[in-house]
Length: 99
Image (cartoon, rainbow, N blue to C red; front, side, top):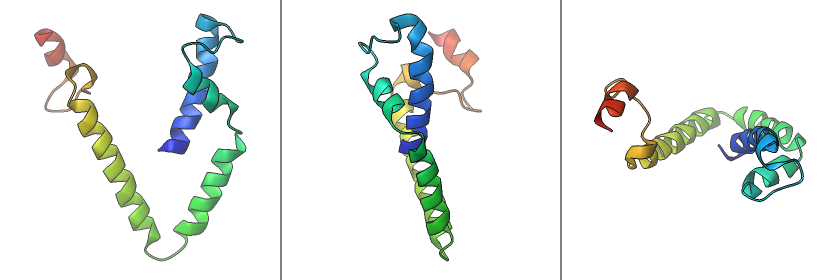
């Protein structure tokens, strides 16, 4: 999750250049930090994941941990109405009607 967010931060940082200017980091320090991280970091992460995932039983643990992280993030975001994502039982249209 962290490594993926670094990649997303690099993209967001580039997109924010038009708003803030290329040399202005004010208001986007985290995204600037993400952009400064070497792109090889993702490659190294994938290599480690492949190597460790080759060990019997590890893949299930990796998948379980990822599912727990995303479930926790979703629960945290759902706790705040403004951040609640639409779900099959609660589509975006029904939330907009209640706003």
